[in-house]
Length: 418
Length: 82
Image (tube, rainbow over all chains, first blue to last red):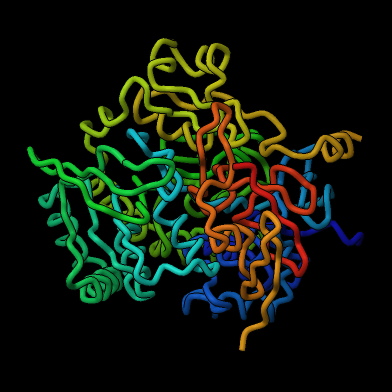
């Protein structure tokens, strides 16, 4: 078999992708995982200071033992034909791989909501700042404000606190009542409860303000403070970094490129994680945001089903159901409040690639017109950032995805089309 | 002792642990504005995971490299446009 042909190819080396690859490799075929990062683990298991999160270690060891290949630092940008993908990497340039079965586990990104000053340097994603810190950015004694929504804020606060940062506060937009209901439902998921308690106890001493959100980031050329609102009160918190995240948005671009049918919250899949496209399975956040445990079990089911082990896959269904229930509770608890739609002012930039302000987008009737008239979503990120924001602000869904799904060198495009 | 690598950021030598991303080296050089936007605004890293393109820099003459996903290599020459 040629070197670049795989029985099962997995895109994304986070929990879902690793679980899929480990399961698929049990039967001994040729299995590899592609990831655009230099190391596996995805975002949640991103390695810091050379060490992986405890949860990742076992899966990585299994992958190694089962001879799962790892194609690192490579990004899929086109699908030139059935069973073929074109990739580009910093070190290798353009190359192609072929597959019999494909598992997409492309994960999620943070959702950012525009507010005045959010484009200032040092206003970052919560996960974005954590990734930078894990890569060696010293955060000790830095003043960090964390704002937005969701359990990620707590995890990032804990990480920053442990690494000596001066975490000023966590501003959670959800009301306390919604979180209390969520806390109650945690009782039905013991492992989550332990996780939540573990997080809280190490966060003692950090202000956790519910029904609180950022209204402006301020500073000349770089961030100096953030204005926060809670009820009728608005005040300024000085900070070196503002870590923001308003939930997660699935990375659907590759699935869309391959023609997978979409459901309301992600790629539509059947009970075996199979998408509407033959031989293309989807697992993890791209089938709907659900967190670590659900990603793992969906990955396992996809890996088992892709290698024909239907009965074993079925035995994982109850775990998936439990994960989905938890995900639904999470979504309810951290639903974004409508007031956040008013944070962006008419002159606030929404598209950071092309510097398009909200008022110009609102003068259009939909995505297509906005693209044509303002170039919104037409820059290098191809709407990955402004897409989820505009969906929340305007209710517009991104309509079409065209190759290349990532900007690539012209030479790569030409090679891929040969 | 961790292995260290030295890169040049806008002509200044920056030493980081092997495996550190280029974005970290740029930040360690005291740079917060990695690039200028199309209307000239200073911009720095946002997503940290290769999605937003705000951390673009020039690496060894190659423009528009996402500094958050490329590990530092010995002798690398990194340039920011801000």
